[in-house]
Length: 80
Image (cartoon, rainbow, N blue to C red; front, side, top):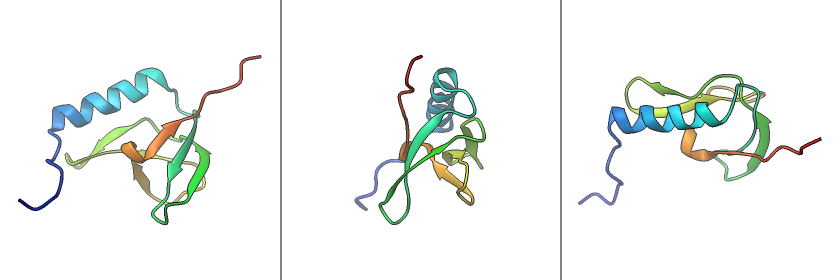
């Protein structure tokens, strides 16, 4: 036992992306946990997608590269 969580299947990763994309459009307000542990508010600039068959990711405004979808939390938007 390595202490690592079991890898998710491609179907599980795609399901996570599909669920996020169904609930949130590109441009959605989110917070992301950066590698440093800092939480940053930003917006999505892509749909969530499976990267190379091993990770559910999303691209975010003002952040280089993509982040694991599990580190991203959608923010509730204020209603007018």
